[in-house]
Image (tube, rainbow, N blue to C red; front, side, top):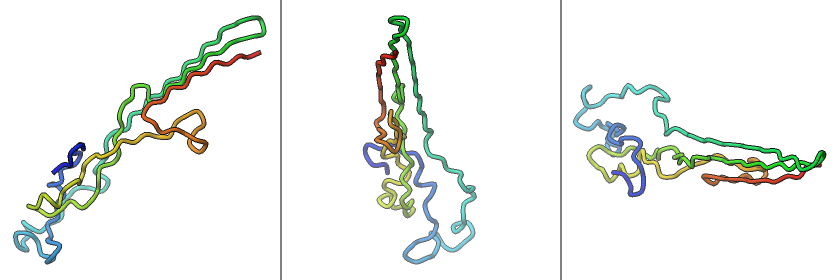
Amino acid sequence: MTQPGTVQWLNPDAFVSTVDPSTGACFGGDSSKNCQFGNLGRNALRGPNFTWSDFYVSKWFPLTEQLKLRFDAQFFNVFNHPNFGLPSMVLAGIPGKPSTQTGFGALTYTTSPPTGLLGVGLGGDSTPRMIALQLRLEF
C-alpha cells in the first residue's frame, strides 16, 4: 500500500519475509517450497536516476579601447528536472498483512546537490533551480 503523495518504486510484495517474526517458523510450513531465500544478487536494486543540467553563457561588449563590459548568466538545473531521493527502506512487512508494508519502496522526497556561486561549504544553495546573472565592468 503506497502512502498518498508518494511514488511506488519497489513492490513490497517482492520483499516480504518468509519467516513469521513472532514464531520463527516459515509461513505455510517448514518445507523447501515455503521457506527459502531468494536469488537476487547483491546491489541489484538501484534508486531513480539523477539528472542535473547546468548551463553557463558569457558575452563581452567592448565600450572603449581599454574598457569592457562582461555579461554572465549561470543556470543550475536549467530544465528543472525533479530528482527523487532513495526509496524508503523500512521493513518489507509480513505476507498477507498490507498494514505492515506501508511506505516500503516509496519515493517520498526530492533531492538536489548543493549549488551556487559560493560552492558547497561557503553558503551553497540546494534549491531545485537557480539562475545567477552578473554584469562586470573591466578596465
